[in-house]
Image (cartoon, rainbow, N blue to C red; front, top):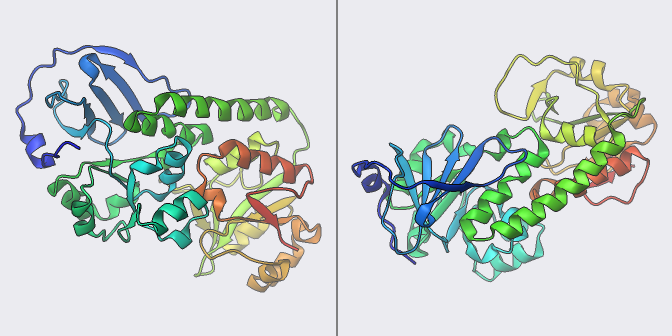
Length: 364
């Protein structure tokens, strides 16, 4: 593995005029938060919205900014990647690249994938602690050559600066800013570029697209759709709901449903997919929903309708509760970010009245 130069040194390099031309670009169908251009001599330019530019340096080649004023250099085929963005690890597993993951911020008990659990238990993937306080010594000793962070790192910019200071390039992924579920999944192509698995990533993405697009056609013009609401109750008593138009609500619509809160106007326009609303607003818009889905990833979920009613007696008024059409998400629904099509098919199944699903379970 090539020895990494410090990012500070890279950024201070005098910018020279770029004489290399773009040979081709990575085709993107839905994602709009990144792009990839392939240059002559094997150089690759990655642009991520709101971020610095990235240049992948081919083996045996010199650093080249390709004409950009400010870039982060990544050496071709990084072998020891730190995935602070935990949702990304499933995409690495999907493109057969877990062997390139050397660190994460979770313990084995936090995962549902047997392959990931095994690699953590075998010490092949190190737990370096929370993204906000990683164990730098492990990262240095294990020769980490790339850190992939979520946008949560912006809450702790000094962490990013420290990683760069010790010579680890940091790529901040923004898949959470993609409102289209297939746009979020299309980031698998970027990880394919980084790991040399472009063809596998594209093939997998296309297979998921086919399933989603077929479902979308089947239910595009259906009338009298069942209404669905997705939420959880915060520790402070607020109801946290998915915003209309976010990727989960779009998956529900693709599956043939209609989001029950689609007419609520939310004042905040931040990038978060969820928002807190008061109980009165939630009750007014969700009491007649045909199906309600409780998001279990925050508080561990529920085991029965009684657990839900214990949160608030007024849940007894809800149409979905009366009809025993209340569901809870499994942990793997959010961990298996590559399974967009399978999760959407589960939404379709519960809309059709079926019980045999993988990513949800009915509260009884």
